[in-house]
Image (cartoon, rainbow, N blue to C red; front, side, top):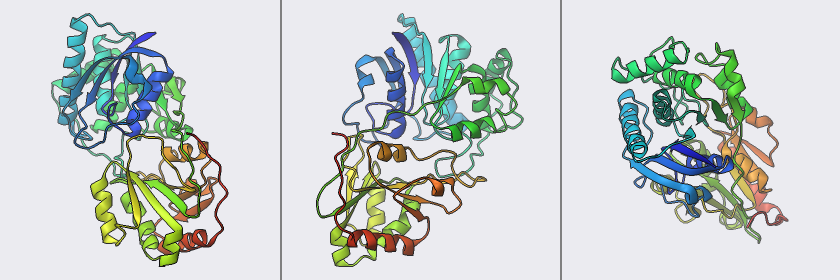
Length: 383
């Protein structure tokens, strides 16, 4: 058993892909006990159901009030200060950790663990990275810069102690990447493509030994069940980032005739019900699309899983790595309708159906064919 200090903004009891990934990694590596600093996400996320198994070994928790996705230097510093205060209090009460862990949801966790690692509170550190730290979830390049303050002085001191050169730019993301390179003994990513993208970026490409510390690992998917019956059920997930990509699909669904719509049912799982409801109202689909709370419950996946490619990072043709939902659907044996830009590598991924983004007529034609086809023969997968 290894006592672990985990800094993970997204964590149980809240439901989010990053929270599930963090819980899965800690459980897979035998972390026990676990002390967790997380963000208070009650205002933006539902509570997870069921709760992950890692909850059984969580010893101490501290919930920090923080912006939902902090990227500004001052916000990152505020979060890190709160995380360090909690860790120092636990240490003063006798806590000792064999390792540290920073979660996959953005920059704040990695900055916090880097500072704790530099102080010697944890002898080793695993950083889990599921996104490009240089880009926002919607693909925009992050251009926030560091400030010449006490926090930057501490970061400079840590990089010097780890013999890692300071970044050539003042971008926040580059400084956090440098800190990960210097202090993390293990860097966990969920695909070979993401590993290659990070290792070829401007901060890591001149550190050849770093590749030896990168581990490609993906959590086991959430079990899903297929539905049976005369209605062809298509399920997918929606949030603020994916809704623009989903809009042409909804426009196509709104064009179906009454008989077609009766044969084809669309369901969306989301943690942002208000945004999804507003989008459905614009298309007159309030009563035609099922909206389900995405609380981490193993779900009825339907006859097809609608998977949206992640937005391409600014300056790159596509995101380096497949959507997490794609592995879940494939592991559950669910046929996939994969929506991706025509220049994305995802167009070569084996799927039951491919749809180009921004192509209403293609989606309309596919829906008509599915509605006219005989009932699919499906088998139950999962519980």
